[in-house]
Figure 1 (tube, each protein chain N blue to C red):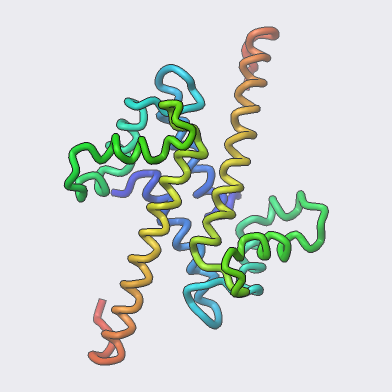
Figure 2 (cartoon, each protein chain N blue to C red):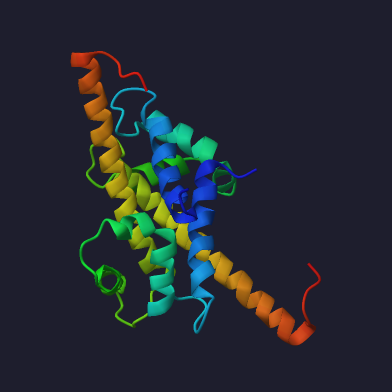
Length: 109
Length: 109
């Protein structure tokens, strides 16, 4: 049975290919495939963005080799950036919780 | 309900903290915490390695700031490296499958 970390890594590959196989080169995400991935997999993140061109902006930032398509390595950069941001929020939340417990007693939830 | 990609990213944070919280600084992996993580989460990968010091070698490679501990960002580099390797194996497997189908007909599995 795979470990949690193995399942997470497998999930990254599965999600990438779920969209990259739709049209054209099956090993890369076209502009529209990336848009679909973002709208389906990261809808909460997108709703929090004010820039209406955020998907295109992110896509251009990720396209390191500038070929107009995103390969898995380029896609993973997005996952890294978002995971690190999530982890920083988690750290902040933990600190706030410790602070609250110290000064106001443990929270009830 | 979180998407598959959101669950994968959440899993990366969860796995990291499952080990980093064991002793000392709860936001970083000590040498022994990283060893436990590797032996539990990546046991299949470790079994395929010939170098008996592979865990220490990987740890030293990941410790970008050289402080002897691994923070989440440094840990994620490992996940990226392994995910990209997995994806390349997946691509190779897909090519072999296409080749087999072309010359020998579709496989039965």
